[in-house]
Amino acid sequence: MRSITLGEVEITRIMEWEGAFGPARAIVPDAGIETWKANEELLTPHFWEPDADRWIGALQTWVLRSAGRTVLVDTGVGNGRERPSMPMFHHRNTDFLARLAAAGVRPQDVDVVVNTHLHADHVGWNTVGRGPGAWEPAFPRATYLMPAADHAHFDPANGRDLRVDDIALFEDSVAPVVEAGQAVLWEGAYRIDENLVLEAAPGHTPGSSVLRLSSGGERAVFVGDLLHSPVQIVEPSCNSCFCEDEEQAAATRRRVLERAADERELVVPAHFGGPGAFEVRREGSRFAVRDWASYSA
Image (cartoon, rainbow, N blue to C red; front, side):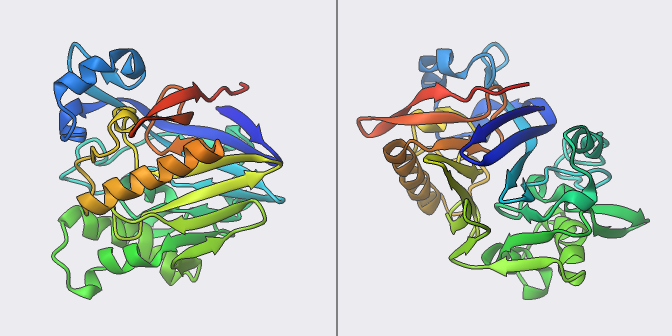
């Protein structure tokens, strides 16, 4: 657990898992090996294993204590999920809820859950099992904020040709929350409190969003999967292999980084290991890390 305070908001990082996921250039296929090698100092040791050419990433949740409430940003993969085409997510078994408890957060303490988008590694702990094939909200008092565009995109009832894993994640991690009456499907922008506001940031998925924090003159932006690797900071036109609308994703990434540089926002991606967050500066048409986040234990 690591924490940082911006203005009146305390941010605590809860790691579900961190390690090497797979071939680096399979994750960010638009970035050639020469780009990775040219930025080795930036990428190692936390984000790239150069000898094996493997991308290092994290599955994590950010706990925000804001305006007297407890807010979770993304909920990882979850336990016991059927994800046959994603071996690293298939039938996982971690102590994530115990890690939350160690940070002083019991399930009944959570007021708001933010899913920046509805991919499998951002919604898994939305629910917990209550029997074979049965799921219920993991946080019984929480309001779950889900992008309406993603809900429509991944809902099997809408007749789209979905992957088996996408149908499964909707059925085990999204639909039970909606059926329990705990979901708010929002569009455009959604203000959570005086410090936090969600804004649409489409491209990675139709409903991808960012969460902006502004408190006491300090700022942060939780960018979900707009960035998978720091290689996308120096080459913002490079998408991950998971971006569904590549042109829109690249434009959104650049727009968010430009604002972060101009307004000195701390940028908090969903899957950065190591320091996990950074300040950015402009460097011509590209960007560079100004500084990495520092935390208290």
